[in-house]
Length: 190
Image (cartoon, rainbow, N blue to C red; front, top):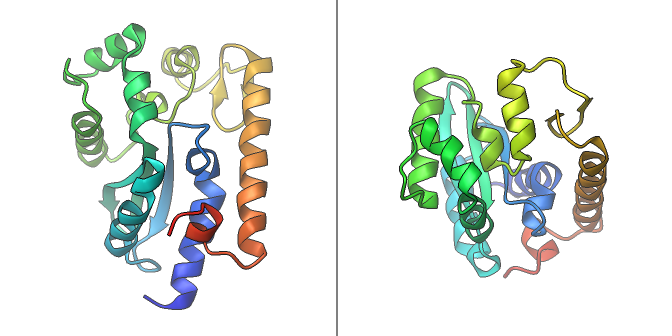
């Protein structure tokens, strides 16, 4: 892996998953070029280093020349899956009632690979409010009140605050990288 690939991967990770890396969002999803990055090497390195922060990654799909790289906090996803309403929706989509994070991610990965598109419940995994995930499904992506990090069907004000917090995380982490730190130094992970 070249120095430029290492740096570029860190920049993409910071830009697209800063709220997850900084602990305020349960998960983020990044589409990466398999021609630009050795995805398996980056995933292995991330998992080895980030475990100290309770973070993990999983390659959900290598679809053509792209890979879907999922970065998550197992603890935050487990907490999310404990919500009875979330469990009900996931079970209706064919997920196991046991709802372990690993089982759910494997099921999500299978659904993406089989259908070649994002299953609508992916918003649950990414920490979007359930009312917005259900609103998206019911409205087939239309009739939303606000579009930012996701399409909002529920509380606009809460979503605006969340979008602003996500942007603060992005600026903070990207600034650290611009100052010369690599992604792991910026996160204080050795």
